[in-house]
Image (cartoon, rainbow, N blue to C red; front, side):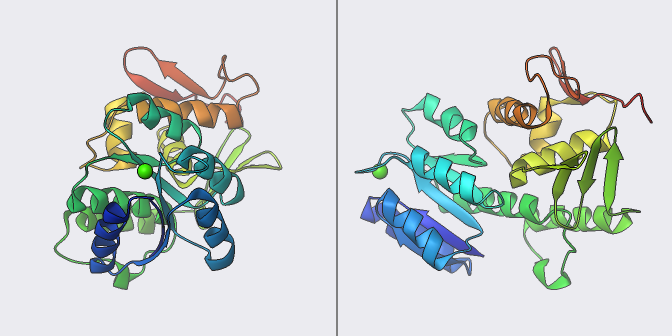
Length: 256
Ligand code: CA
């Protein structure tokens, strides 16, 4: 896995670098936003970007927005400060997949990275070599591997939508809806449970992972982003319905 690390504090950068390398990840580092964007151009593709928010020149948010626009399939995790509650949601609104709150432990950071990487690989053929033993997160992906193998076809169609598994894309009619890895996984979950209520807790567990300790708001922010992409009128959604007090539901297609 290739990681792009943007962090201006040398001590934190070193701490993250050591832990990524210990987990056999390749890491390239930048200490300001422009350098990170340049690295993405010259040294990419990267699987996941880890972005600090408070930086000397352009902010991590701006870097997030620009990376997301240019690399829709890249995983993005924001490294947010504890005091800045609103930062978490703002990063997600700009297209980040997740955030880790400082100060974080190496275990927490690695769990988030692995959970995101798992989402990014869903739908792709699972290589036996990628499944490592002795890791709780990997046990979960074994179950997923079985589910993927049992998938009778490589796409799912509901109404005007076609979700393809191999390349993890979503089409509405002839138009491709460009989704982030997290958005694609969430759409897949709701489409697979067409017409059924899915609670926010279940969505959090299924999409972000069993060991996720984050906020239920990440679910709502991602739903909002998806609606903006697929609905003609996002404030009156025709496809993803809100089930008040519970969660969300992909509306059953009347067209069959
Ligand atoms: Ca900083």
